[in-house]
Length: 124
Image 1 (cartoon, rainbow, N blue to C red):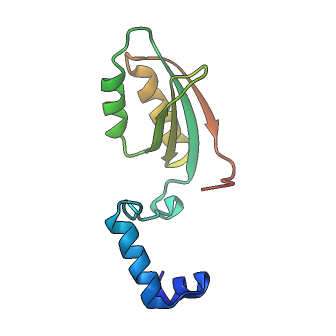
Image 2 (cartoon, helix red, strand yellow):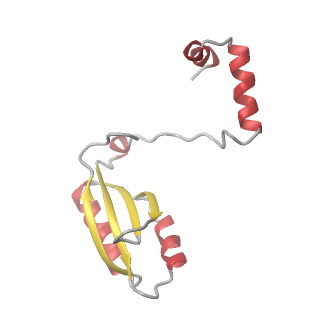
């Protein structure tokens, strides 16, 4: 968004908006920017959440490292509740989801998985 467009939204002069944003960046309040990828445009038309339970004594750090290597993984969090991890994936069709779920189940650290298709994103 341009300084002018932002200034119109917050009712300040573009120079004031630029100064405030730069200060927020310098102070670490704005930690960075990111690209928003259209998953459909790259052929990843199936999104799902896979709940993962590890086996007792599994090396969680090694499992997390393996998750970071998979391009299908959009988000992964260590969580409370009946699962240890909640993993959001975007895949090429149901075959892609099947492949990532099979990969997870083949991991010796994984004791169980439960997959849920994302039908519609409400808040992103």
